[in-house]
Image (cartoon, rainbow, N blue to C red; front, side):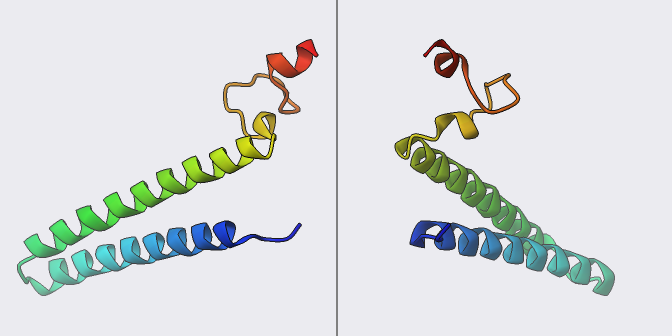
Amino acid sequence: MRLSWWAILLVVLLGLGILVSFLALAMLLEAQYTGDSWMSEVVFAVVAISVFVGLFHLSWKITDGIWRALGMVGSRDSNSDQPDGLNDADLQE
């Protein structure tokens, strides 16, 4: 299967979010051990983790919309209780 531009973009955005989150945690640890004022690092960490969670949520919604547009709803349908990804509408056909 060929990767499209949106899949690559989502992976890059999630990678950046993870990188910034680890950077924020490293800054917090460094400030704690050196005794510096760590309030700005806390604010940075909260913002970085919020951005990461937001990017993850956005990427999940985008990929879900793309899967629905391609007609593959059952494969990622979290409400489905069927083991093969089929939902009730697919079973009625």
